[in-house]
Amino acid sequence: MPPINHPFQFDVALQAAADAIRAAEGVLIGAGAGMGVDSGLPDFRGPEGFWKAYPPFRGRQFAELSTPHWFRTDPTLAWGFFGHRHNLYRSAIPHAGFGILRRWAERLPCGSFVFTTNVDGQFQKAGFPEDRIVEQHGSIHYLQCVHRCGHGLWQSDGVRVDVDDATIRARSKPPRCPGCGSIARPNILMFGDWEWDPSRYAAQALRYECWLRQVQGRRLVAVDLGAGLEIPTVRIECEARADVLIRINPREADIPASGISLAVGALEALTKIDALLGAGCEAAGCKVAGS
Ligand SMILES: [Zn+2]
Image (cartoon, helix red, strand yellow):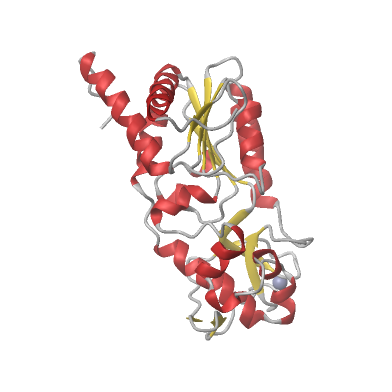
């Protein structure tokens, strides 16, 4: 079904979304790169989106840069690109939509689980519980050995990479594995990546499976935010798991027949749904939900 663009239809869809959240017992929060746009993060949408964020890489593809190959052959380039993103994600402040989702989740009997392909750690930063997040592509806030020497993962809190903005190359020495001294790399699933250490992800996925079993038979709403068609993992997961699907996406808001489509950005949609929830609560004399 195509996205709903007519203002009246949009209002109807908004109300349907608010009703679904009000009736939900649990919420699956699916998030793709579009979720971070309102926090000022690039979504690398298409080659132009990538080059706009990284002008020195004009003519090259995101998939070409995001491979473990460069950590072995050109660590200054690899750590320029990933170090820049590391610094960017660390300094980003999650937009108000994260807080709205968290507040909704906290009042539901089954709470929420976050299913995301983002590696930026923004849900943890916004206060979502670590044991209710599965990061399908790993996280930039954890490092691993490029050779998987057996040292395991470690947090990148203390890592500071100085990056030359003109060339996107690391000026400081790339971090190294504390176990064997080889170059370290983020624990992110890259393209053509056979060395990704999936241990942290596997533990997250197990907790997610447990939560899905717990919420079986309960009213589960999926809110799918900024997840594009190029890598449709989040979209497919949300469609498969939820009783009601709310898809929020300014460009790719197509939905299955029973879904609710909101063709706007994450912050705008969440704020408007929350306002409707607040209005309903005020009418009922309740001050718990809504802002
Ligand atoms: Zn090592």
